[in-house]
Length: 176
Image (tube, rainbow, N blue to C red):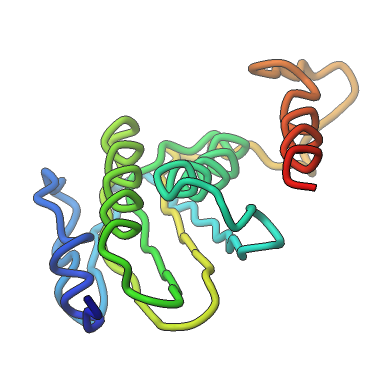
């Protein structure tokens, strides 16, 4: 079944998430309106994932949704920001109901885990790509900036170094 842009948004991306008090207007209008709480700094980051460049064609849609959010979460964490909202622009070759269902379920599972609200975006037809703009807040002047790094600072790593590269190697070996 082929859906229009507004049908895709309504059916797969306009979930009944609990809105926070700072959202004046979320999904459903030309733009989102957000009130920034006093003594906070707005932090934003954007990442685009393109099929064949940033992910394999056969990736499961729920895993792709997780990856799309995770790369943005990483950017906010590096700055010391608390994630709050995202917008998503998705370009898909065809409006495949199963694919959209798995993708949106994976997306909202990840968003709900981190208490992030989808506030808008765009849908288009074309080669598969996903762009997420994430917004977060930092209290006062506590942003962690690269230019402020100095010798003796501690660096913390989660997970195991090299795991991602090893996984990519195994996936490429499997698909060849």
